Image (tube, rainbow, N blue to C red; front, side, top):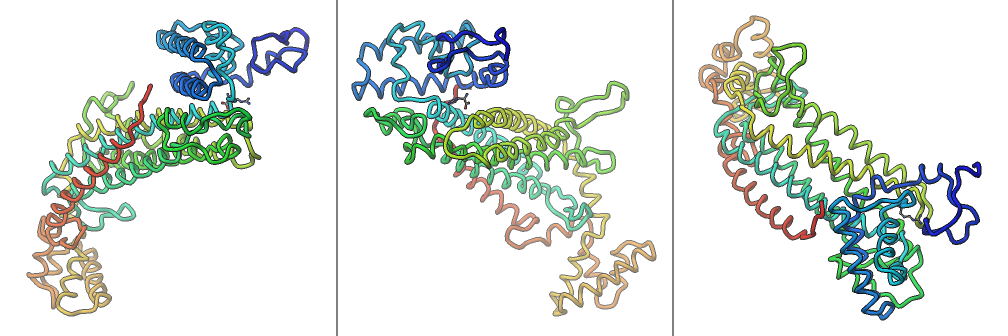
Length: 477
Ligand code: ARG
């Protein structure tokens, strides 16, 4: 460090007290978090308001000083919202910036705002408030996507396609069954989001830097004021706890993975090879060179962005793994991955939802693929099982019939109709559209169980919507 890149100590940093020289430019450049944590401003202000009200309640602040700070906080909020707030080079983070401006506006009363508080409990509070609000948005967007999938499942009526295992045609499934499979998946994601919300719903204010306070603070009252379900139990734990960030990131990562899987299906289904779906023009892109191209970019990016979101989760976990109690500056690295995951997952839910809502399913091609294939082979084995044959023997009989049909390049139905013990009655099970109707067991892919499933799914979604409404926090985004 040369004398030129340091500043003399003055009131420009919150922690200048014990230093003889000011911060090096390199330190400020490397450690500053304001470019990304200014997004927490509304939550920082909300937390400060509750802190001030708490200080007034326990007589650590006079009502007059409290009012002066609250008025200043209103002004800071308005300036930030109107983009007229003047950020200073010394504002290393949002907490510093807000407190600096409050002190400018409120005069000496401003110097009392940080009584009994540290940026360590403050930043944890801000991030928990932010996470709760964002998770509520996530849950709402998930429910919207589930509604789209449910609606498209109802519209699909009796349309069917081959279900796949190993990406080989396996057995017929209703298109509604396939769409509802994704809808149930996202319903589990809603439950995970609600659990992550519960993890975030603990107030850290009053924990101070790490050990609480010698002052008669009222963390319970502050927690209630901020709408948290409870206050922290252990000051050391709560200032260093970022489990709630990991929980949120994991829930978001699972959503990203599920969007990615639908994305992959849409990439396949919209290819000329499958031709099961046409993506609406509004949700597809063209090629700058090849005029005939129509590309499923949303589906591809849903697949691609999942990698980055998994990276956000694993990056955070690696940041956390070696940290001794309690606060360490490493924890500042919790924000960008979380912000990015929320932004990307929210945009992905909207885009994929729009793509599915507007897609045209080419059910003629789907049904032809199901009818042309040997996807009814298991049904022939089941036919033999119904007449008393052990399944293993039935499997061997039908395998031989399949081998013969391949060797002779004939349809499975024609070989079945000429085979002893099978014949026309068995061959009828391979007629177009017959196989899907045979799937009658609970939760199966045929019309009868799917009709039941649609009812049960509607009820499950109604329950989810109720649970999401009960999250009840307020977003500032
Ligand atoms: N910008 C910091 C963070 O995001 C705020 C807390 C800083 N606390 C401290 N003792 N340096 O974690």
